[in-house]
Length: 113
Length: 116
Image: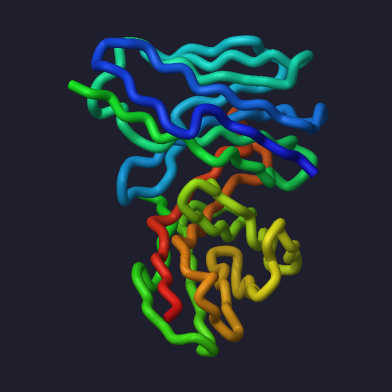
């Protein structure tokens, strides 16, 4: 089955700096790569996703890049703010598998004011 | 707004007890999932269901069972709870495959279960 590795497990940055979280996956059939943000005590919520036919996607201060050949994808947050502090999960899935996603272990991002 | 809800939100029980966690959704989604979250281990899939007649094991199904009573309801049972099942449990839903975000998972608020 699919295996997703996520690094780093913790990340601390100063407000205004950029943050990058990286994930690798093992199954070349995976074609959908979402990122979820989980604030303390809350449920995970999708913040951005990318499909295998696209190399990069941006939404304001966040962006995701995908390298299918190397089987890795990354989340980039620019101009970080304290409210970006949360746990971020990457995931990989393919649509022929009932939308079943395999999640990374999560990255705890702390943005220091 | 359409939502995913879970009951109870918190539960403390003793070793050997039978526990049921319930999930309901008003999103009209066909697919439902149960995940377990432990610190540093991400979200691990316990069971998932395509529809009311379809139940599938996830990566950590041992010690758990599920029931899909209706399209909108998916229950998780611990037949005989043990301390290492202490965790945060999330129910999630996703759509059948229409639109751009067909694999997006919508999570419930979670149930914090403690087994003493």
